[in-house]
Image (cartoon, rainbow, N blue to C red; front, side, top):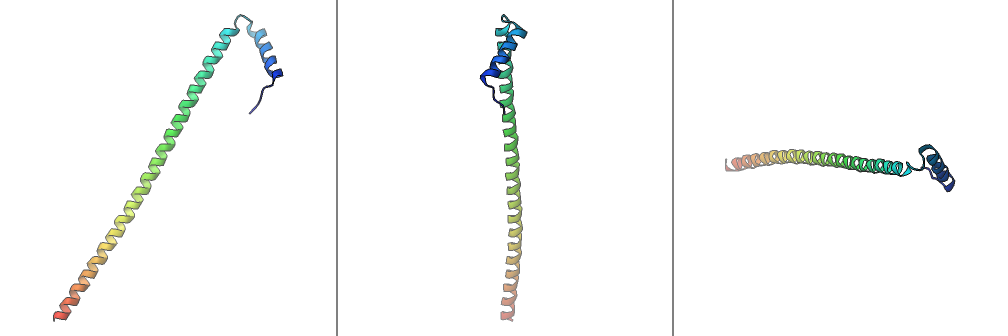
Length: 100
């Protein structure tokens, strides 16, 4: 980002003393501390919300994969049932032909 050296910090302090006045500097510092702590809290809440949303998206992706796998298993099961039915019918026909 950017960095502040001693020269920049001293210029900011001198301007602050001139603009605000030496008696009001503690109140300004408390005000700035309140603002920065509020921004920190807001930042943490934002990160938490983003993490929750990404977790929800991951869960949705996993659910979709599970449903897709379930559909393919059901489809393969139906194909297997049809194959077994055809095989049973063929065996029954062969037995009937041997008895005749």
